[in-house]
Length: 329
Image 1 (cartoon, rainbow, N blue to C red):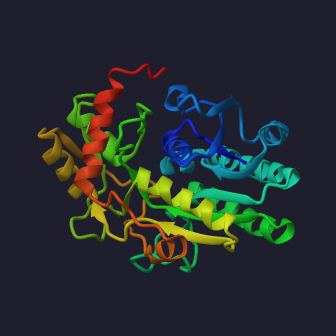
Image 2: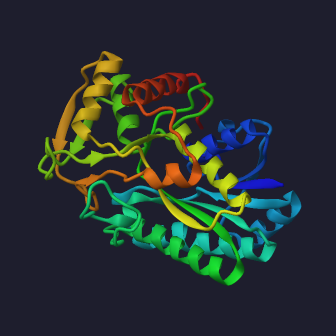
């Protein structure tokens, strides 16, 4: 039994690969390395450099490696970019997911874990956000992910494909053992950007919007540590293997921090008071998104181990320092 991880050389995918290998699983990764890094993968994982939207390639990989489960991370993920390039996002996140799902059905794969997003909720009318809230994404990114959720639901009904959709909130931090982390130099993740500013790799940073209807006027988000998120995927795989029904679950901690609060924590943990500029809101940014996350705990038996913002920030800072010694080309 082999688990196929698409986008496994990227940020979240590489943490999933480590979690699978730590659990004794066989892993094959498909990644086109457009944003991922070959060196982020341990030698125990087989890397196929290719595109998950290549249906024939996916069929061959599944057959050659005896794939019985898929964890699908490959995607484009930047909300403002999706507003500027909607068709590119529908291609990367929806069309290619359709090809991957078709290959899985043809290969008889029965277990599929999908990396979705809280962006499917749009501007939520309820905080914290429950899974059954009406879905109204406000960006092409959110819509592209929701379309894939729909395809999985339909393929599940028609072909017996069991799935767990995990809707992420804001992912942050790095592997506690320092094996992998967020490695893309121009990534837009808030904690990554703030850590780079603290270490002098950026001259400073910007805060996009200070007039949101939140306590301090900046966006409010639920930050989930990336190894905790990988563990939720591992538990989703066990859940499906034990006969669990297809389900959709939020992945967050159920508590929000504002952009300004996060910056203050990064300054405190790093000991650096880096420059911060204030800019206009970005297109597609909701004011506040915090998970109602009791279902993932109840259904998967998931218990977070790293629910501490200072720890998450410290991991990000340590990973940024380690990147200076790596070949990130």
